Image (cartoon, rainbow, N blue to C red; front, side):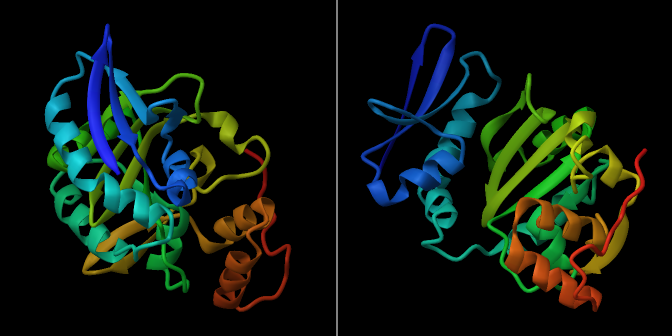
Length: 235
């Protein structure tokens, strides 16, 4: 695996080349786009602190890809503790979603990364709070599920989105959308208070996505075998 960087015009490319084919899918799962020369992520060349971010990317890229491929264990708990230590000192409105939210509620699984949900201000604040962990700059997004995205690596991937679009709940409530925000619960983990979507909502999401094993684990935690545990009211 070789990591390099090049700038063409107004764009800068983080390039992963000579990657073992066994890890191509993991690279794509991380959003790297396959080109003739390898797998790339593209950023505006005038992005602040891009050299510092690239240095962190070089340091973490191999570990990040191996974890995404399931070839190395993911110390998500260390990553979450590190994140909480940084985030707790900032007035950021955020919550934990995805498999990380299930893990802190005692569901028996190992998250591949941590998914943090916030607003546009929070997305930028988090980028400043963990700037030395960034492997990508915090970027504004268009025609996507949220208006902001950031990615860092500290023991494991930490990713966050800001200002999730309302339409993500149109086919049923997601655990990261506006509807989840209105139903958040708090759990104690590692000496910190963390806001998470309720297990019933995450069960509904897993059933809709066909994640049968994960849904069964949530059902056992809820003490029910019903496949229709939750009926959420619209609005």
